[in-house]
Image 1 (cartoon, rainbow, N blue to C red):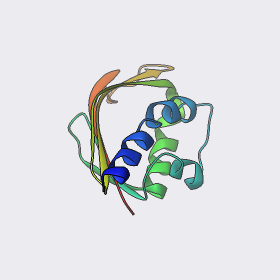
Image 2: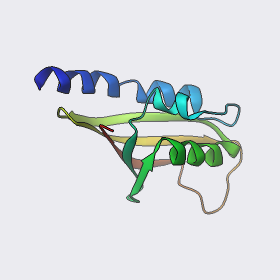
Image 3: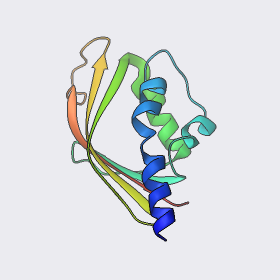
Length: 117
């Protein structure tokens, strides 16, 4: 169980790099690419909003967000894991091509829980 927890912690560290490479308006993503970084089912809580996701609906969300997104930066505050899941607590800063009314602020708190599928 301890070894699986450690593997989960190590795997979670790819999230910021993956997002920097794949979350911008110049890229498109397949479900296979999303699976490189995310579990089959997970929770995301940007700015206190709770979103249950799977690979396909997260890919659709990313496709919608990318339209005016230049890039993204993560400041991971805390990571915890057990044998079945990882929780990342972070601040996420999004760089937009243009400011769009009604979107998330440039930086917001976020928690992501990745669960075994």
